[in-house]
Amino acid sequence: MDVLLNGFNTLSHGLIGYIVPFLFVLTIVVFFHELGHFLVARWAGVKVLTFSLGFGPELFGFNDRHGTRWKVSAIPLGGYVKFFGDESEASTPSADAMNAMTEDERKVSFHGQKVGPRAAIVAAGPIANFLLAIVIFAALFTFFGKPSQSARVDVVQENSAAAAAGFKQGDVVTAIDGSPIDSFTTMQRLVSAKAGVPLVFTVKRGDQTVTLNGTPELREIKDSFGNAHRIGVLGITRATGPGDTVTQPVNPATALWLGVKETWFVVDRTLSYIGGVFTGRENADQVGGPIRIAQISGQVATIGLSALIHLAAVLSVSIGLLNLFPVPLLDGGHLLFYAVEAIRGKPLSERSQELGFRVGLALVLMLMLFATYNDILHLAAS
Image (cartoon, rainbow, N blue to C red):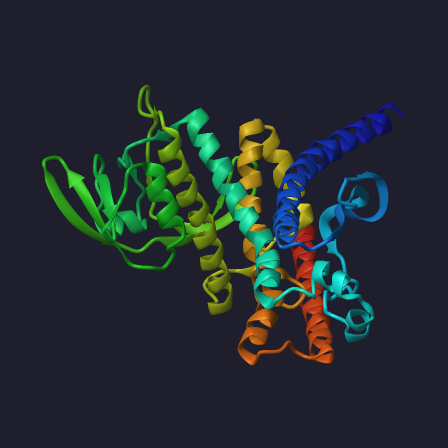
């Protein structure tokens, strides 16, 4: 009996350890995404009926002075903003519904707006995600500084890409393909994304500067939590001694620029991975869903609050980027329809938009099922 109780307590603690950090991270990201839609809609004069965190039955909420219902719903896996006149799940205009509106109602309806304001309202969600990430990264740099180590080579592994390239102990990498390298972390990031890609390394060797040509090898590496990642590896390590890691203070302006660069790094790495999946360079089993995100959130939460907030920034970029894909049902799909409307001078037919919605829904559901399948395999292997 005691064994059963201990097992139950361990399981409960594990679930809480995953779910609470996951909901914390997801709620921040979803709230700012929907807030982007909401604020631009208010600016455009569109009446907002509902601002919901989560889906399904309402748990609690309130009405603001503009008549918007702010609520928290039972299924906390997303959220939505509902505009006046935006009645269909596909967010497609209904000719009958529009004809039944008065002139004043059309002015405050979403579909009564010109294509420009509609596109701005839709694009505001992903843009808000990118801005949130920039602000979070900038705040972390401002309050915690920028840690760095010189890109010094302390150990060259035998039969590695670094050994084949001619790296020696004591070398300091100063540039890769002409891009300056200011730290070992910067070098690791660049190399990890370039498996199988020939790179030109500028190296300081004593008083000389030499050029080495190396191609990172694709290897499976496990992080401190046991999660496997396939990345590009040279086969060099950096020993950390007292005073090797320097934390540089960062002023707010520099921190903001570093926040932009960090956000772009996440975008670039994500797009590179997706491109690699389609070209066969990357394996699609790294695609994860809510289960994987929950697991990572719980693991990161053990490091500290700043690490969890950093994860929120990374997730915010990922969700903003995902929503910009030109798939009907996502924000990018709506923007695609609006681009066609701007070119044609009139919107696509209700039938065409409804068909696009069904295709988009099928694609999103297939992606969710595939990601969940990967998550289950990942949990089974861990």
